[in-house]
Image 1 (cartoon, helix red, strand yellow):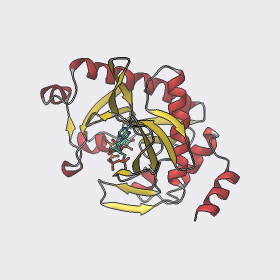
Image 2 (cartoon, helix red, strand yellow; image 1 turned 90 degrees about the vertical axis):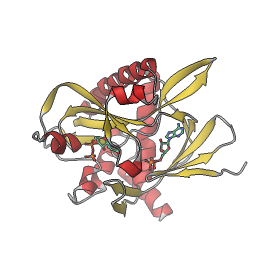
Image 3 (tube, protein in one colour; image 1 turned 45 degrees about the vertical axis):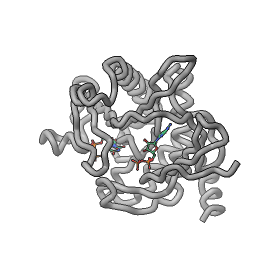
Length: 251
Ligand code: ADP
Ligand code: UDP
């Protein structure tokens, strides 16, 4: 069966697959920031994010945290469950950085007294505005039960990821998650969707606080590819040699 493109986003393409309840998620090298106002290509980023997301989603499955990942099929693509995406971006923060610093005028790098969960309405035309749980319930984007599940899963994911990154000398500052609904055994369940990678996490080296994520690109910190590679090497998903080989064949 020929795969058909269903959607092209800023960082990924979504294709149909042989099974109606599954999709193919294709990771591009395109980097965008500030809602598409800054654009570039970071060669190999898509490959790295495909591998990192595979690893982290697989670990989450082992902890019984439902997520859409089924199987990686090549360097840039993975099969995922097709979900009805909830139009909310869930941001979990452990340390202040990014939009919260500007919004509330607090210093960057402040360790928060407990993880902070924020919601943004997933709407590019409106620059993904900050919303509260009341908006989510009032406009019917999720039910009360779904929202409780989303918050509980997000905090479990944060606990796991914080520890996992700590083991490779990386601080998980904040990250963004997306969730969707899927029918399973006559029950509608909430599943983690999208990706977990340096594109949607802030990751700082534990010893130096060097930024190893998309902020290098967002704020012109130089060596924009270095964070992606460093995280991939430390997680052991791709060796430097393997990565160079892949890149040579591809470009
Ligand atoms: P954007 O849409 O913000 O530009 P991407 O380029 O990452 O983002 O595109 C991926 C799109 O696929 C996102 O809109 C995301 O919500 C959607 N998506 C992620 N996982 C799934 C899934 N399991 N089922 C359906 N859609 C998904
Ligand atoms: N994030 C994301 N996609 C978005 C907005 C934010 O993946 O559309 C991630 C971002 O990489 C960071 C976290 O969510 O890890 C918090 O982002 P923030 O609200 O601080 O916004 P930013 O300053 O990144 O625009």
